[in-house]
Length: 496
Image (spheres, rainbow, N blue to C red):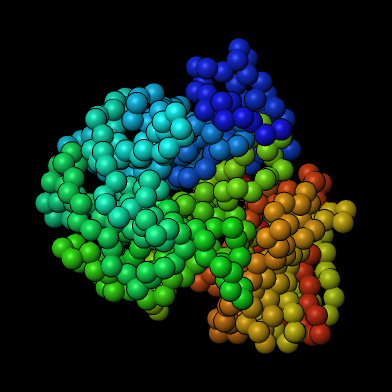
């Protein structure tokens, strides 16, 4: 049942007696709880926020509505980890408890200064007529984990932009700090603007990022600028992009543009095409950080806005992706699962099998929580693939068509259906790698993350099979191929 506005904008201290505890009990009973992904105890999780390394640990916050699975008043919930694998729940990081964030602590980022962690976020406020007034707010966390709020650092939306003005991502370059903010022009087109500060307190509007996309959707959410291999990269999540062929099939998109480094004085960004980061069904609002060893790491929301999910009636909704390492190779952004995830590996299984125009159900490999590496070579078929989470009339299918150089994920029979109005398949182009297709898979209770050909393409999706749908099948059509399959059972991470 849909909640009313009044119900959606209640804080935890306004909840009925026992309401939050009952929601947790309901969530615990869900058959689709994840085992090695960050997920809420109960309620709704969405955008990752404040991803950083501070005081010897990784910190990752996420948007959280605790009293239901619809989008209501937002908190920042805090998790931390020493290894990017075992995450500990630290409780509420930022609560919507001031006049500047009265209707939600919206998305933002983090940066260290003077042994303190500064958390810059958008405070969402509404007046009695429900008109929005966004503030760019700042909070500070010390080394003991205590968070205190400062006065807003950007109180007004600059001329020419609407009240859709949010999601600051901050970084330092030389003696100055910079942030990009997602914006909407008054003509209802999306863009990104930039501010500069000498101290994280006083911010000066630098202007709009000058790109070659003057009319690309109606809002750009969650921008993130960084540099890698002497090149500038702008990530953002545009809303209002029309589908085209196999591209832009989700309700909203997330992607990147690579170019020469952003001119911090003129805001000019000379870049290439906008490319989708993930070609699956459920990926949005990614955020990156710099690891102590120099790696650029990314985490995304493993979900989508404005979509009903099967767990919505089970007391919880959504999770975060596994952390990914970003590199630029041959002019494109590659994403690979971070090496630290090998800590989760348990029992190893291996098979090598030639499949000739048939479906071959593996007898020695199955499961509901695993990592798998599949190398397909000597391809002489028109279609090759693997079926995962196979059970009674259920399967999640991943297949490749060599002549079309196309990889497709099909969740039409993956279990409980969702978002059927947006289709049941996702496809992307993928060329053979020296005649071989390599698929690196992470399968959890209700999700799959696919890294194809060493991170050239990634497809992420929620799936909701029955608990006994654990089979794995290899197949080819009109010919043969050789499959080399290695699987590791993944050990459940420490209790959150």
